[in-house]
Image (cartoon, rainbow over all chains, first blue to last red; front, side, top):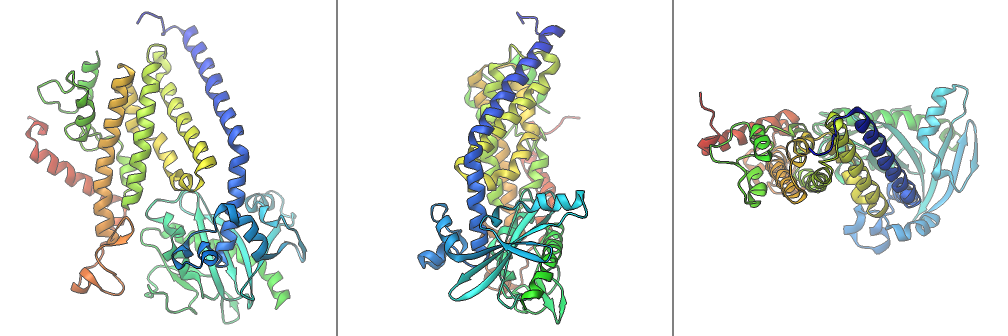
Length: 254
Length: 230
C-alpha cells in the first residue's frame, strides 16, 4: 500500500468525509423524491378505500379479470370523489365532515392516546355509495409478526355485515404472513358478520375452523393462512380493537 | 494476493487453482463448485426466510444480483483508500446507502414494485454474502473482476434460493408462482383426487434448511472434489 491508510488521522478524516458525503447524498435523494412519494402514498390510500368497498379497476372497465386490481392512479382521485360521498371525522360523540379525513394518520392518533390518556382520538370514517347501496369504510391499523399491518373494512348499511376488506403490511414474511394482501385471504371476509347475536365479536382469523371455503358466513370466522399464525392473530386483534372504537357512533345511526 | 485470499475463503478447494485467469470462471464457479450457500454456507438466513414461495425467491435473486454487482464495483473502486481499521463499517455504509437509494427511487417511480420489495430491503443489507464478497474479493481486485464476482455469487445464491423455493411452494402449497399445478386441494381435483395432501410443514423455515441440506448432499456426492479428506 503506497498510502498510509492505517494512521489514526487518516482513518478519522476518512470516516468524517464518508459520513458527510453519504449523509448529504441520502438527504438530497430523500428530499428530492419526497413529494412524489407522498403523492404515491396518498393515491394508494384512495385506491385502498375504494377497493375495500368493491370499486376496482374491473368496476370501471367492466372486465372481471381486473376485479382484483386497484383503480389506476391516474383515475383514482376522480373516482374517489365520485364514490366516497362523505368523509367523517368522529371525535368523542360528535362527527364532522372533513374532505381530507382520509389523510388522518391513524398511527399518530393512537400514539397520542398512548402519550396522553385524555386525548380524544380523531377517527376517520368514509361513507361510500355504489349502485344505490351505502357502505361504511373503517380504516384500521395493528401489528403483525414483524411490523405494522393495516387495512380497510367496508360495512354494509346494516353496520353488521362486511362488504369487503383489504389488508396490507409493512414487512410480513413473504409467502406466509405477507399473503394477507392476497385476494384468497381478504375475499373471505365479504359477507361475514361482526356481531354474534347482539354481541360484538369482530372477525376471527381462525386456524382449524374446518371451513376452507368459508361457506358459513355467520360464524365470525375466516380461514387462517398456514404458517402465518401471528400475522393472522394480528389481523383478528386489529379488527376487534379498531372496529370497537366506531361502535358508539354506529349505534347512534341504527 | 487475490488468489491467496480467495483460496482461504473456500472451504475445500480442489487442488487446481480455483480462480484461473479466465474471468468467466468468476461467474461459473459460484454457481457450482464454490456456491455461496451450499459450499461457503453464507446467506442461509435469507434462504430460510423467504423461500416459502417461488416468486419471492426470484425477486430476492434479482435484488441481490443488482446490489452485489454494483456494491462490489463501488468497494473495488474505493479499495485503496479505505482505512483497514474501519473497512467493515465502510462496507456496511456502502451497501446500506445503495439499498436505501434504490428503495427511494422505486418508491417514487415504481411504487407497486417497491411495496413488493420492501421486505427484502432489510434482508439484503444484512445478507452475509454481500459483506463476504466485499471483504474477500472486492477489497483485493479491480472493478471488472469484482463486478463479475458479484454477479456470479449472487446468481449462485439465487440458484439455490430458486431451487428451494420451487420445492417448498410445490410441496407446501401445491402451486408454482401462484398457479395451482397439482389441482385444487379443496375440490380434490388433479393429484388430490388420489389422496395426496399438501405438506404444510414445507412452508415453515426448518424445511428450507432440510432442503438445503439435501442439495448439499446431492452436490457433494456427485462431485468428489468437494468431499473432505480425513
